[in-house]
Image (cartoon, rainbow, N blue to C red; front, side):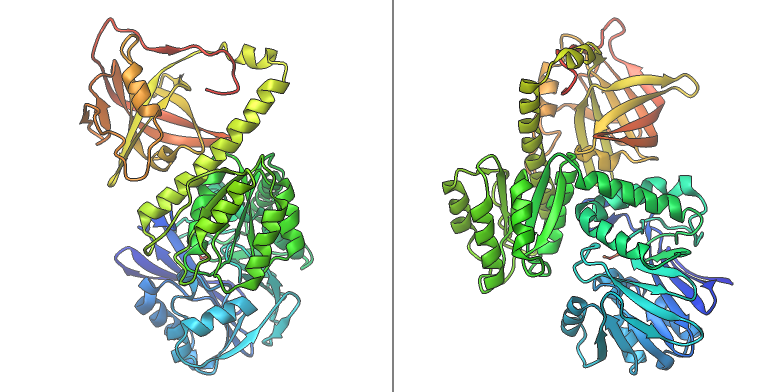
Length: 570
Ligand code: FEO
């Protein structure tokens, strides 16, 4: 049974996915941004589930923007007064935003959640409610064969996450894990090609920084026996390609934990804006290919902190509350274990009682530790520009670490192979792109024609380039070709690192193209292009693009060419 009730661009889909089990999917067709720099191409969904044995369980709710639609739908499916349990997989508002409303309608329901989630909920819900803390191995039997077993899965991606497994239907409810921001009427994952890119992008943004936690959770999942469906909180449910997609998670996470360079990110989760800021920094760092491992001072023990400090290339510390003796012990452990080849980055989370950032900064400096980025001091509720700044800070730290590693490698390697690769030469270009209010530009050289019909080319972009957000399949941009003998100024300008708030096009002469992106006045030629597809490979993404229009400004001009000495950097 599939029923769809429509309101403009927010719709609800209810689908029976197994005996006595209904998925209530809130389809948010237009959402184009999620957290920080997580731009979405295909909207998203917030999935909630209803299991009706002899007793009734509701798993998660929806985003507040769906309040009316969701509550009406729930009322049509079940008398809310008969709901016995509400499982809260974690307390992020896109799933728990309607918990208080549902509890009002379902006063006899008992909330089942992890210890941390219950603590958060007590602050979130303004009247007393019945609750029970659950952990790995705990079970609730609601009759008709539906026995629900819980699996603790902390840090996926919030500290309080639990999975729930229905032994009768063999459905595992994972909320954020194994999800994707992809909005479609198809309930399941039958079209692998359509979802693969979003599945990967979501993993990179949300799950990658917690790859160790993910591997632990997957180990516990393996002990549950056969899993037929993974019912996540976002996007289609995994059924047709469950094996392939879980294997992807396994491989990506294993690779992530084996990255040569890892940064330890230490903070207190749930304090001030620490979660959001930590993820923004971690996301920027990961774009460079440097791994991130997250430690919560309040949850992880000193042995884990010591172990990570020993092998990390850099440390990031979110200032904990000054009253926390546990966090203080963790920080002492960092100071005792840090080595002078490591980098340090500090941030304040706009908590009400942060430890002073300057004092800790000086302690690290006195030990000879170099700053990976200037301390981030948040004096206000963070908005997009602050998250961007954090993102860039992470990227800059990643680059510093990589530069250091590659200098060491260059010193120690026989360079014959790298020299040979360096003989591949290429033209010089400026890519410019405009999407909504955001315009960006960058220097590119790895560009090569790839097809005649239609006219197309490929270009390779490092994952850490912010312009990637504007160059997803379907996006349009302009490829400006630089002219031999007249490109140094533009090259210098577009290679400059941009500080937060700076305009990439300040002082550059340009006019808007048909697709809105800037055409540089000094370009030898330009092409209006569309990104058709992307292939993510190691440290770069390869974009196949087609050309829709173009013009040459100087018929006899030649393209500027870059000759390199070695092939292991630009
Ligand atoms: Fe989809 Fe962590 O919320």
